[in-house]
Length: 145
Image (cartoon, rainbow, N blue to C red):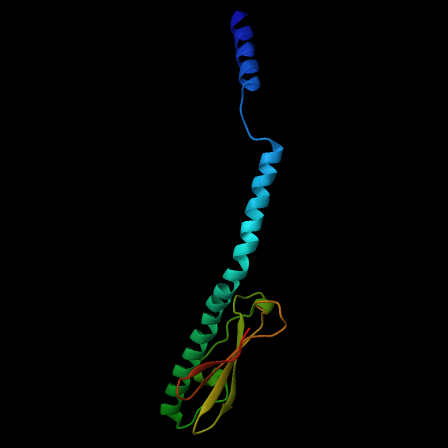
């Protein structure tokens, strides 16, 4: 019985003398963290957008390479992505992971232009990012987001 009583007294003393943070202190820390996040977020958004545009550049580089191979074989560029062997990844809107829709805008025996149009508005301003590539392999941003 004394063992049970002494354990009870021990836990009672432990709970009384336990130091910790008050609710007010925790709320102040959360507010400070929130303010720091709000200050850092606008500086990070352009970096995130730049990383996402890498997808467009990589896919357009692939289209350029496939179009060049097609031209060497058929003496003209192709208007159809399927003819050159390019397979569009599923877009985010369709449950996939691709953020850009790839299309060949023009193609003839002298050149081609392919575009990568974003299906996601990265910064919420209503403007969708557009990139292009031509027969020289020059990749340019036509519409920044």
